[in-house]
Figure 1 (cartoon, rainbow, N blue to C red):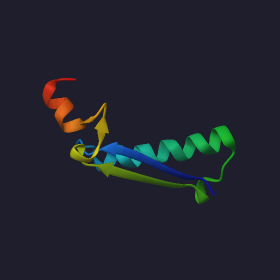
Figure 2: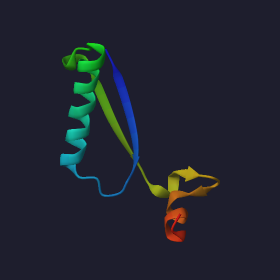
Figure 3: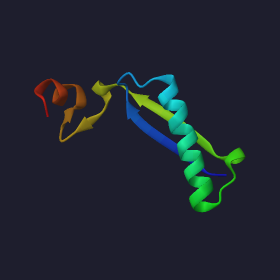
Figure 4: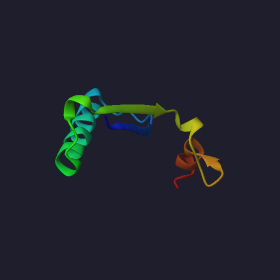
Length: 67
């Protein structure tokens, strides 16, 4: 049973986009590795940009600076 955990920042990703992401990952595992789509679990964690850091600063701060 494949378990895929995708972490993204909360940036207004739509429900439809998340559904396509889940479908696409499930299809990829089925096509590439022969995994059963019915037992494939995909979880999307949306993380606030204040709680995601790169290079010693938050994503929120980096975006305000235009990095």
